[in-house]
Image (cartoon, rainbow, N blue to C red):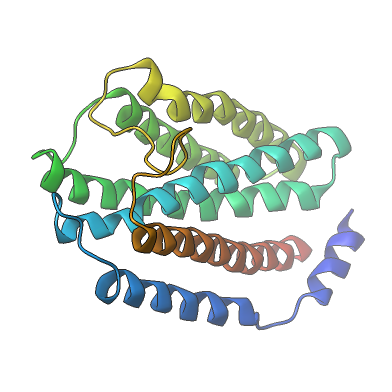
Length: 227
């Protein structure tokens, strides 16, 4: 196990150009969203937060925490430490994206709803998920034994999966201030073609940024595991 980690860490380059590509992409889509995308008639300029908030939440929860859960399941099955390190890396990067979503959401909500925060089903469960993943990372730092740490962390990571599904369907099960999906819905998206293009680009850019950060964090985890 240790030798495979050492081999993987040597194979990774000391500098990853994906970080540079992701940074350029973020700047590019920000310029398009701010200066070249129409302002929404009812919400005004505050609606441009839409190009940051949903993509960050989607990538953080479904991609970041989803991969964390899958890698955790792989670790419990194969006991490969690399899967555990991937789960840790994806959870940490996913938490950063979810933090962005939780920060931008209230800023947008204050303009649209007139309140920074409401304790409705989706907002409350998303905040609970944030604390759950933060607890997952704290747990990892509190246990010295690698095998025990990986096993306990994997179980906690898998417990986040039902909560992610609950968050996704909460707007259908409960009456909340959080709006229904306006892009991923059975009918056509409730966005103009220019806005929809900007949103799609924002989603792709967030995904590219996640991959770049995940590669960097996983490389750091491999180097740390060698010691």
